[in-house]
Image (cartoon, rainbow, N blue to C red):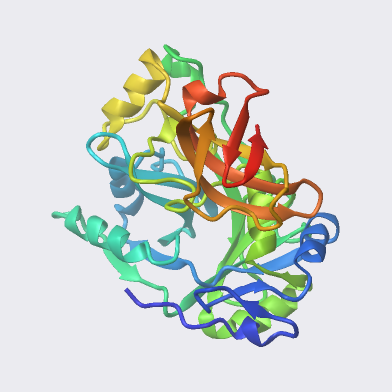
Length: 352
């Protein structure tokens, strides 16, 4: 898998690089950047994400058979999300999806594309599809608050209650993200509203990233701002806010946007059906408010305790411009049965 090179947007005034050194953590004012993203619009450099392409007439049917999402009816210039599960129903891969009518594009977390590509290659058998690592040639950015790419908003089907009738869920993707060609350069745009405000993803040739970002006409914002807004919207990062034990029902966003509960057989489907119909997941992904007694948010993996028992771990924690310190955390379901439960993580108290 090609490793992403440092983004040209790191040369922008005030840019402070992330620890990985590929994109900006912030551009000098992380809290101001958050506020701008919500109120007037901001552009987020997400060019560190891995990008794959799938071509061939059978691409959607083939991906449909492997993943949790209903993809056979995905129309040209529509997007969605999907998961690849283990045989026991654990989440092994998450990808955002976009089909432009000839190619299905998959973008996933930095460093996760190689494993996803290897899995898909192993599952080709005699299916006439072509898989490519597009990371070196294409880059993703997102922007908020500028509704010029599309007037249509995303559509997400409600998750039916347990023991639902099949007619309760339409035979289309559970989440449909409208999109279209990106007018300023080759590529496409996809509206997700992922941050709780109008949010658009744009894929462009990597060499055109700086020009396309400038043409979007929005102030730059770093990963600090992106994390703060996505945590407030309860949007997880695969492998950061989840772990190797995660099942789809533990993550409310994925259950709503990436899992179709009434489609053909795929690996791990038995676990999905069993948890949905017969029980509850052992854990939940929740948003925590931290009391701020420590000026530094807790690090990834910090244990969470209830009394003298460890009941979970911190995923991403960050300072939000209005909410203070907040975090996404995976916590035992029994520990968060009551909304006013008081938890401890590091030296701070936390509440739901």
